[in-house]
Image: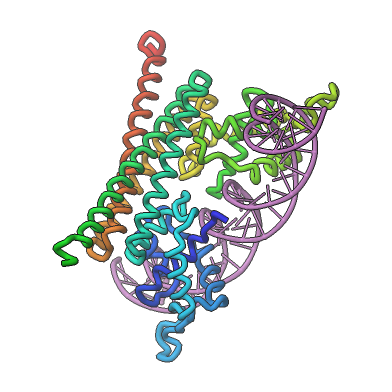
Length: 189
Length: 189
DNA sequence: GCACGATGTATCGGCGCGATACAACTGATT
DNA sequence: AATCAGTTGTATCGCGCCGATACATCGTGC
């Protein structure tokens, strides 16, 4: 069940700001997650339809009244949708920091409360540290068995994970500093 | 058609060295591509079956004769399989440097001729440079529109791609140096 | 007037994943 | 000797998401 249904979270989170139509949702997410890593229409549109029939979204057929600019289906969160978003943001368990899902989770951090943010970051960091260990293990175990190209691939992969750990460490520190700032005597007093 | 059927290339390339059974194929690839990024059995076994029925692989039911250690299906490349591998390695067009497929391609570099290696590396580098441009573009275009977390996500994504470009530059240089070594004045005249 | 690119919605085939089940072997523990 | 856990080993199922593809509309330049 690690398949966290990225789309669900991504769509709910994006529509939380304001109602949008499919094409625009994709553009927003694309700019946040990077031009690659953008969600495809092939999964976006079916997901939107599914979410409507699940009662999470409602449609505002823009232009249907005015007659101009037809064929633009604007989606907005229903009450159930808002609730579901809150649940998803708060859950933050296990799969929140697994692989691909993490990017989307992180992109929704402004809508996530501080405690959950820290929990996710620490979870992700632990996961990356595990990988680091696994990779080193693998490299050590079969050192001479691999060719130069495979060795390069492993080295590059290792470095990439190391960078992410450093990045996460910085983010975690920032979160803690911000929390300390809020719990400051000057603030609370 | 960008879906390069990673499995196909990965399996053919792995079996090129010597016949193996599914479990072992997965272990080998896992150690090359990293413990994450490992191909799942859920796609491996069906792929093996498909390739047998396509005539690319043949099975040697190990232990069927001796009676010991049943249930170990050893696959080996057929003549057609060897041919297909050559085709796949030589094709190297377009999808060879697209996203996920690249890792697998690279892992098979020892079986790829020098000219194709260089072509793939240069293609990948160009692709990454494009992305770099797209990301910078996106960041510039909507600078103030995003929150701090999204900005961090973009920054980290950008850095990651930059690292890969540097890595590719080094690899390309190595390839060229090796080629120069072979095309020495003494050789090419 | 017309071509071309961006906007906009939609469907289809299928790859690869995670979950799950099951069987045989191996080693440790008691 | 019995049992229990971990590894080896094959297999299937549901389905998320992707890439390809097909249209329709709109703005703009030539």
